[in-house]
Length: 128
Ligand code: SF4
Image (cartoon, rainbow, N blue to C red; front, side, top):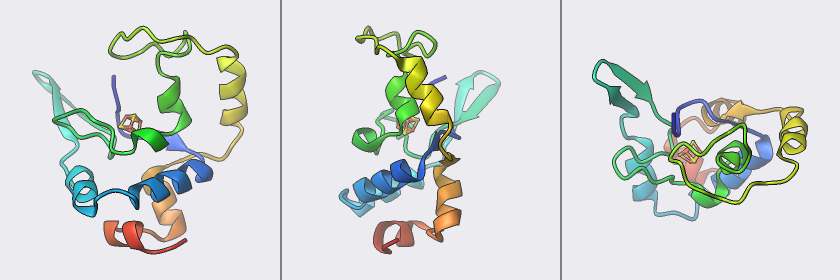
């Protein structure tokens, strides 16, 4: 399932995403982040997408700053590309994820709560 809600990231990744968001057109950020993320998946099944996924174009708002787990899809055998793209495999992917899983990771909204950046305005303007 591609780009579902709940992707976890380290604080460093959160900071990098924040810095990237602040380089983007605020109207574009608002358009994507304020979209309804509940989309129909199959006839009777809906799913909630990642807050950074544009649910119509399927573009990732923060692609250059996306967290490690998003970068690993398709690059390690245990995380196959959800759209079947052939990309070069990464050596040592298991070691990378083992190290990464020792880091404190939270979802973007959880980091927002922890840093006091609750709304889009403070997210885009307030320094941390
Ligand atoms: S951060 Fe980007 S690549 Fe990762 S799940 Fe969200 S939309 Fe997809």
